[in-house]
Every structure is written in structure tokens, then in C-alpha cells.
Length: 399
Image (cartoon, rainbow, N blue to C red):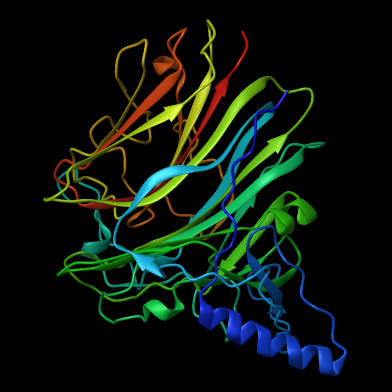
């Protein structure tokens, strides 16, 4: 059985609609086909082929633009704070997988660990990760999306973000756009389909954007996905350069357990003025011996700066802080990309310390108390300052 699925439609700004409408008119006059659209987002035809391995580069055609789907509706283009809300929810046989990677790297050699503390992005002169050897992209990175054989993609959403002000200032006007290439495929331009989370402080200029790319992932399947042109700044500052991307995919597969799947997103800054955020997630009644997983996307969690934590509890049980061997109890957001404590996702580049970008999956089982119908989630910053952008929950519905 399946409950209703909640999604947010695309609400592009008026400027985007005007641009796309003009482009579509030109294409119609030329007899060119429209670009394929991902469900809920604008995905434009290939800007150029995406090289399939380091060092590969093939020049490609100029982009063809697609008209924005549906009527253009006026919405706020950005907000300094976006409360968390459900993006996708379903009860089905299946699960959630994700791929992700950083968009930055140390310009030369990364600083060594000092006094037991892992050197952070603020300790280094940071530059862009760029694996595609394409002179037309200034950053790019890859990660493997492991969709099980025989599974059907129910939902796929791409999140990207980072710091726009370090040694340089990058324009926020470019933040709502990235290039994405499916395994072995060509780059497509993906535009954000929701309000941009964007917060300026005295020391940083941070954003998160996202887009529904269900159609793209459903057609391409598993493998190495490449994301390029994520809008992040390079250089050195007291906050440091950071940025990255995560692709979250819910799938359905008949021979897997019946589970409740939920993806929530927002844009919450945790700093000296706002140390914690709490969210209540509705659940199906938790059965006995239930197992589950909790995924997190966060920005500028510094390795070795302690006090940050993620605590979860059902309404029938005790609060349980999430941690594992890769993410300490008091340093959960520590620039890692791990699954249940293991750095297992194949990535290019592959860093243990991702310099201010977290995309982790934790074991939720200890917090799942039988009979619970809500999951309370609390993010705390401690001494660190960070931004939380998305989380997902996967829990069993039956024993």
C-alpha cells in the first residue's frame, strides 16, 4: 500500500519565464525539439558532453533552451530562513539512497591535523574540485548512486549550496543553476524549482538550492552522476570556502520491506543567535524491532569543532543522539560523507575530510520505540556555526 505522495511544483521567477519563453520561440522557429523536462524542475538540453572519466573532454553543441513548465507564478526568489517541511512522503516497499560530493578542495596540500583536531576549511587556501578536465566548467565532482537492481525511482531531488564569499565574492544570481550529467551522458542545465535559501552574515554568504530531477534519474538509473558549476567561492577566510551537492532518491522495489520514506528540507542557520532547531516528523506507528535510517545534508560543519549534535526521539521513547565511528557524538557535522560510519560511496574526488560539507546516513534503529507515531529531530550547533539544508528518514512499517 502507499500513502499520498507530497511534492512541491516548480515556481520559477518571472525573469526565468521570460527568458525561457523567448528561447522556446526561437527553437520553434528553427524546428528544434524542446529539451526534456525533469518532473517539477526545468532541465535544459546538454550544454556539452560530460566527460565520462578524468581527462576526457568532448566539445559539444550550444545549449537549446526549454520553455518553463506551466504558468509563471510570482514567488520570493530567496529567503534567509526556510523552516523545514516535508518534500516527499510515502509508505511503500523500498527505500532511500543518495549520492553526494564536495565542490571544493585545498589549493595545494591540506593542513595537517593539529593537536588532535582535524584541520578545517578555514585553515586552508581553498580552490575548486574539478574532475572533468573541461575548460568550460570551473568546478565539477562525481558520486555513485547505487539504486538497487529492479527498483523503480519514485522521487529524486538534487540539493546544492555553499559559501559565496571567501577570498572572492560569487554572485547569488548564479546560485540557482547547476549542470548535471547522468552516467555516461551529457551535461544538462538544472534550475532550482523552489525558493532559494540565502543568508548573509558579516563573515559568510551562504545558500542552498534544490530541484526535482525525478525524470532524469528515472531514465538514467544507477551509476556515476556529475554535478558542475555549483556556485561556490574559493580562497581563504575566517569561515572558509565550502560547498557541495547531494542527490536523494526514493525508490520502490516489491521484494524489500514495507517502509515509511520521508524527505524534509529547509534552510536553517545554527550560530550564536540561533543554536538549535527542532522538527516533528509524522510517522506510521513504529512496530516492534523496527529498523531505520536517518540522512543529513549540512554546510560548514568543521571537523574538530565540537558541540554540534543531532538528537532524535519518538513520542513514546527517549531522546537518542546520533553518532557512529565516523561522526562523533559531539562532532556529528564534521565534513564527512558516510553511510553508517563507513565512507563507502565511490566519488571523484574522494576526500575523508570534505572541508565544510556533510552528507551522512545514520542508524536510526536505537531511537525507534514501538508504538511511536512522531519522530522529534533536534539539531544543535554547540561551538560550531553551520547550516542545515535537508534530512530524510527511512523506517520499517511492519516487523
